[in-house]
Length: 330
Image 1 (tube, one colour):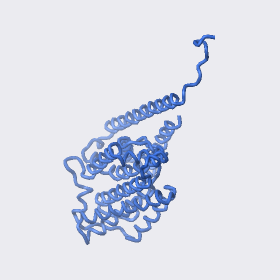
Image 2 (tube, one colour):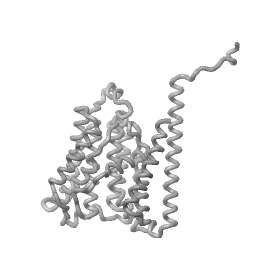
Image 3 (cartoon, helix red, strand yellow):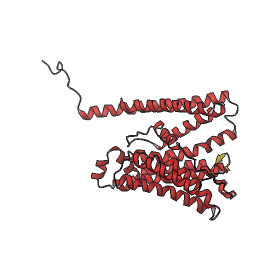
Image 4 (cartoon, one colour):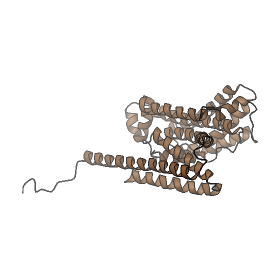
């Protein structure tokens, strides 16, 4: 029998791995293109059916509303890349807002805000120590932190606090031209995170930990230090989000931030992040934030009742997450 007549054997393992990875990349590109087209269609439909959508006031309000979810999703992405999760960010939002609003009566506004953001980062550090140093499950640690920090928030203030300093409201309500200052801060944070993850050793190590923690450890890189850094960044982003939210609405309440972590996780997954770690992008997460913000805005413009908004939004998120899941398992 000639060599041409022989049955070819299976391709080498490295070749199969390369083919699988290429197919996964192609599916990811196709899915991302589909999400982009869906976003464009939603904008086109909204523009054609609602006279209020393209008004400057609505677009400015849309940008303001996306800031909280955007900052939380950015911090959540950093943690998810390590293979972890942070369920405490919503509670940190509430605590930071209450703390900043309460301190402005006694200290200058910038100091009050800085202390509140630092408190958020401090909670993140505690989460990071428990996860990285004591090897506790991130879900359990941050779930416990969710209830503990919420309890601290109610202990700190059982009633809403209305800041008396006009300067406190500037951060959340002022605009530079048509762009809200808060939105500029969020976009700057995304730009910094993009550089951090792609251009710095610490950022690349965080991504690598989610892909193969043991390989990172064998390479001589401190896994504990980088996991702790990831949770500290998440806490910092949540603290900043809480301060900006309190500044925007003009009042801080202990109940603010409940279930905010779910939107943050959804934005990351919509943007292509894998909850198993090691995969996700800053640009994709920003796209997820934009899509969620647009859905919220459209449901409000169409006067959909708040309960039905939750149902429809939940179904949309479930479908998108299912599509991303199929992308991973095929």
